[in-house]
Amino acid sequence: MSAYPVSPTEMTGGMMYFPRMLDKIRLHARGELGEDYLPNLGRARAADGACANFLRVKYEELRDRVLAGGTDEEILEWCYEKGRRLNRGDLVVWNGFVSKLGWNDFVTPMLEDQKQKGGFAHRTDIVTVPDFIDLDEGRRS
Image 1 (spheres, rainbow, N blue to C red):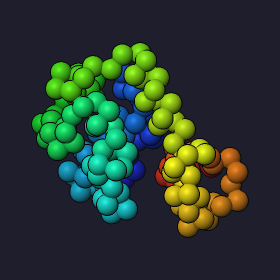
Image 2: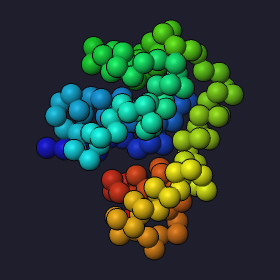
Image 3: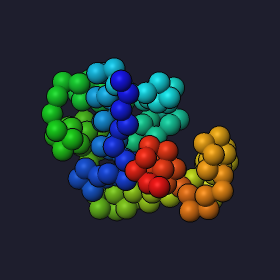
Image 4: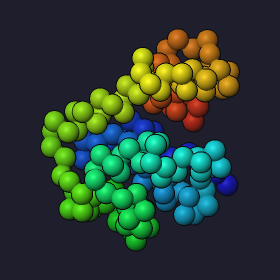
């Protein structure tokens, strides 16, 4: 049985996407993460890798920490201890990046391709990757 991870707009400690990354790790460990997610899981050039890199932690170590248990808040604190602590400015930069990903940037062609493949090419209200993910996973109509 596969389940969707939480929305990329969910936050832990004011940081977008972080809960989604942790949710994907947990779902995968339980065998509940859909196969469509596996090619980019933890990949350096995908969102998981970007998030881990922004925190200055190794994804593999983060994965091991998640699987050891704890709340999202505890794991974020672990990231701050092992990598770097984000300040308010860092969170503004990260959240701006995540929330606008695909909107007139280097990801736009991939987003448009995914919209086409998903039958959503006509949806002019879907302008970012988080918009598309929430639509594709049924959180948005």
